[in-house]
Image (cartoon, rainbow, N blue to C red; front, side, top):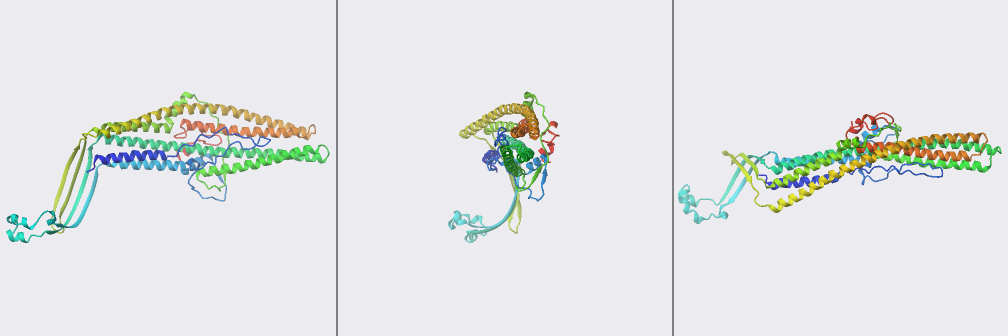
Length: 521
């Protein structure tokens, strides 16, 4: 017979394991810092984005299981390909899937207590009994001589050591017919399972955000290297003109030295930015399951298509529907409410049915059918300390669940509105930074023309190169911030958790947040 204690033990095991599983889910990565722009050297060049070097032990979304060995050729990698590989191999999502599978198994274990349980047993055994040790003695035999075959003579021959060879087979059935508290607990575990599924979906969104940010960092680093190489060619041309004019006696040695310092400074910046690009590619490989030494080439380029600013109130409503972490908290609230009801209904009676049927007899002899049918009604009379403890515990859990839903709702509102503010500011910054690059290019071109015409020395061209380098860094940084602001807005709206709107598709990179990449298809 399955006791109520067994059901309670299963429940305690399940809820405790659920808490452990929820705690083992990987934490969502912190939003990327978009204000880490730095300038290096007198020209203001250098890669503006800091590449994270955090260990995957602290943030599993930065790691992955290596799915592919390195190959000698360079792999072209689109953003969709990177997102697909990240969803398949990212360590954070692997942990989330394992937690989901563990929660499913725990629910089945608890549900099995309330489901019909049938088992079959069969045994054959030889038993030897010492009747004298059970209280039988020779002095009692004459008193029962009339009951024994052969009278007193039979009594004198009665053995006190008896051997029995028994064979039996039996089928047992048990079923909880009524256990209101147990039924509530199973329903609560169903909500906890759905909460874990929602958390796993939210983890997928975190993977998309993390991989997308890593991909954007590679694009920004590549753009900065391209700018550095272009500016280095310009500095090389100015240096050549300075050398020629110095040899011809037109320019002083100071002008040639100034051009050479500018050229070598740009060389240093290019080396540093190439180093940052290589590390950014390694970080991207690490998050999607490629070997660190695998050479990749990003096949998509910035900018993303522009995005219209949506109404904050409408965005907030959309986020509350789409955000998987919010839906997970709602499921946990429903589970807590059912657990509270179950704690109240522990005082109700429980009805259990048990039955068995089998055959038994002396081995090799005649077998007879045996059966037993029993209905057990358990009525808790006085377990007040336990009932009150369960009630207080579930009250605490319910209060926490309600507080979590309330604070998460306010947090979503804050995140959505902050993301919209960041997106608006980033849009304007990109426009200004792009205009500055154009103006700096024009100014540098005119300074070089005046230098080549002998109207001025190379000081204006050197200053123009420095100004252009600063403008290029600002433009790369602004573009990265704009694209990351759109990615963060999509995350805060819950779009990358479930589905994506058409405005997130197309442009370069193509399909920035496509259904195929998000769903892992």
